[in-house]
Image 1 (spheres, helix red, strand yellow):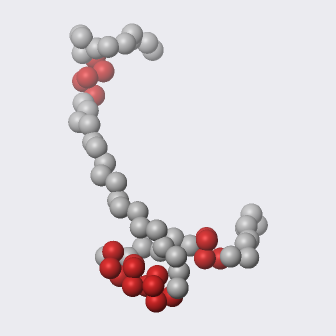
Image 2 (image 1 turned 90 degrees about the vertical axis):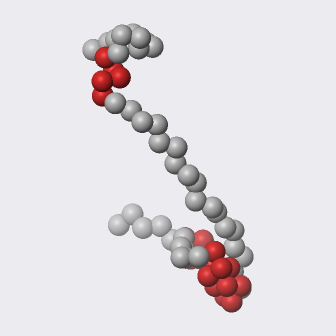
Length: 63
């Protein structure tokens, strides 16, 4: 079946909470060591299909 097993099932979980305070309270209450990760902001670069055909395009045109 392709299942993997471990004697420590808590290492296989990833919990999410609405707020940071809820996460800390849950971990403290259950005696679980925790590590908080802040969400990373995505940097979106605006792109256009027409940029592929610009005259001053860097790089060679290949098919």
